Length: 138
Image (cartoon, helix red, strand yellow):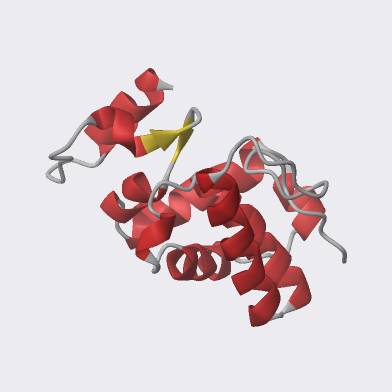
């Protein structure tokens, strides 16, 4: 993970992280602080890489536009309490919103993820843990 952060750090060019690089990840996954450092094109490439690298594109559909996921992830991280949430958790909420089209469901997902980050030992219903995607129903 540290190598990945360094590689992304080099790719950012003139942008720099003024704080502790360890704060760019949560539970081994890059988080909202890292997302905030990326520009629009870098975010699009990140999402495309995630979709292709995890085979998520097969689940959410080939027609999914990276720009839609970027917009929803940006919206997810608009709330300051989400900065430590792993990007992948935000993307799972974005995928779910893409399928459902329900902004309330998206907000509920964000609240659930924040709560899990604050109380990691607390058991949650299946599919809502930070490291587990929520169920996506086509």
